[in-house]
Image (cartoon, rainbow, N blue to C red; front, side, top):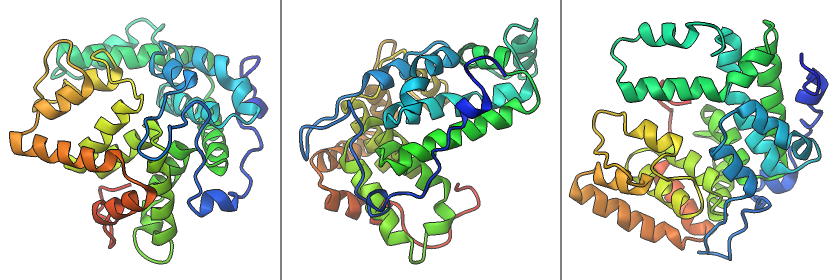
Length: 298
């Protein structure tokens, strides 16, 4: 384990019981992401922008680990995100510095387009620092534990995106039964903060036209949705997308839909843009229906 990244530092003792505020849907607004009131627009934090534009996740963690250990929930959330993104690279020992390691993986997937291969290389570049520094078989588990600890600490503090993430990891436990109502309250409160990562993650989970509306709102509230954002470039590699050079994420999402669906998404976006927590609660009642989840759901 490298200096400055010991197991004790990587996995701080932050996993205490969740405060009542977070359990009861009283989700906090993360520093640097406060909106200007109900219906207002959130502002992405410097930490968020640094993560979205990072070219090396280990370097990103180095810049923000002290803040995370000091209790900054925004830093905790994005440090956890960076660490979790690279657990697979550490587990596989696939360092981009090893001759042929990335090329061999691409060669084993002959159906990859040039764009998909470029995205794979970019992912390896992002995790190169971790893959080169964390090299023992136990390091992947240490890294995953560190990510879990930081995410739990952020959720305990009421960070909107962390609260969403933790609930979506345990959807089978609350899809039906007594836990459903308080969890929907939590998700509604998180969405009402308009934290861009909370909206993005909810959009990924909800899917379909409602999910696209959530992603568009995330873009409006500060998510990096430029034409060269990683998720935008990845979206363009799906066969059904219509990608125009220089188009933003929302433009690509809407242009890839039939006209009637694009109108439906725009109407849903307009409705949610000024929604209160109660309005978000109604939205999740219909988009996250009760009942037994399918095998494909997390």
